[in-house]
Structure formats: C-alpha cells, structure tokens
Length: 222
Image (cartoon, rainbow, N blue to C red; front, side):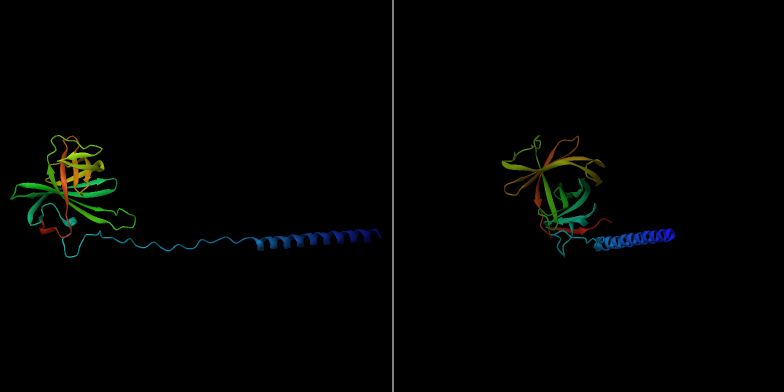
C-alpha cells in the first residue's frame, strides 16, 4: 500500500513538471512570435559622378580668359597687349588670377583679373568675372572701413581681407607673399579697389567689367 502511494506521488510530480515545461515553452514561443522584427535600412543609391559645371558668360566661339598664360598676346577692345606676369591669389578656398598686361605702343600697363564667382543666391550657377583695372592716383589715401570719396564719387565698402599670392613672370611683386585688399562700389556701379603687398604703400584702381568676347588671344607663348 505504501509503495503504491509513493508511486502515485512520483507520477503526479512528473506530470506537474511536464506541464510546467510545456507552459514555459509555449510562453517563450509566443514571446518570440510577438517580438518586433528589426528594421532594415534601405540601401542608399550610389552617389552620382561629379559633373564639371562651366560658369556662365563662357560663350562658345569666344576665347576663354582662363586660358591666358604668361607670354601670350591678347587683344582687348582693339588694343593688343602682352601678358608680362601673373599673380595666383587664394583666400579661404577662393582663388583668382591677376594678369599684368603691357601696351607697348602706349607704354602703359593694366591688370586683368579673372575669377569664377559663385551665384549670389543658392542654386544660381557660377559666373566668370573678368575685370580690367586702371590705376588711379591715391595721393597717400588709405582704404577706410566706411564710405570714402574718390574724385568726387562716393564709394562704399564691399569686401576686405588679406590673401596669399604666388607670382609668375614679371609682376614687380615678390615670388610669394601676402596681399591686403579692400574693395568698394559706387551707386552707379563703379568699382574701386585698394591693394598692397604687405610692407608697401597702397595703390588704387578702377575696374571695368568685360563682357564675353571682349578678349581675343592673339597668340600663345612658345
């Protein structure tokens, strides 16, 4: 009789353990089934190859001022000049070139600046700015941080700073150095710029914008 009681208790214990195990497995499966699936990030498309964008005002059929090199001969508004030298200037990621031109017939020289400028508004295409500079006497003037008057015209400040430059050919400048500049504009659109290599006096020049087709490269240097 005692052995039957013990056997019955053992069987009951086994059944209880089996029931607990089965319930645990069901709960575990239920928990795994209801768990949220991990999100998979969509594959990003590959970046497109960079496309070189030409600035506006580079017109097909006309010479590109960016192709002018030291020793070339150019013609501007019917006047032929020789490129004596070039200043390659950089300032905070911006670069531009200033070319020294000589008119042998008139025994005069002028600077020609060539720069690709970004649009004033986001999304506007870059444009090529080509300016012909004519020096004017400063009579000891220095660039003011506010409005100044030059030859009776009021000029207002636009930009000023210090840029690094590298000289090529005959420019009358050191091989390398720093150049201070201060740019102004008048209400009628005139441009005025002060410039100096550090340690030298200021010089001032008026700028004349050149439209596309104004420059003809007559011949390249050998």
